[in-house]
Length: 133
Image (tube, rainbow, N blue to C red; front, side, top):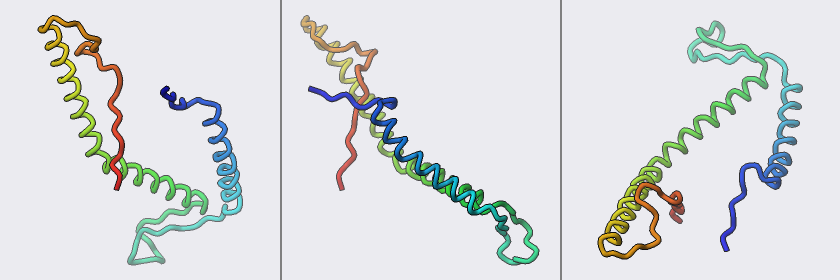
């Protein structure tokens, strides 16, 4: 028997998300309330007194902005690192489709009709496992 993967809207997934997100939201709100004082961040390494470019914002805004930028940079780095695997998966899907159409044409030419999907449709997406290091 095959197990169906949990859908994005399954009740257990929603409960786990709530158990994680609600305390996280409480911590973020408490942090923001406790750190409302303004801080100045200078982007000028040569003059800290009269900086050419600086930003003055509440501390919690600065920290949250830095976290968001870090998550975006990390996501882009992971996406770029996985480009090789996406390229391999696309190549293998093309090969599978070509072989499927070849099998269909060979079975038709031999006179036997088999339970092979048509060449234009692919029944499911190829699932690749990550290599073990």
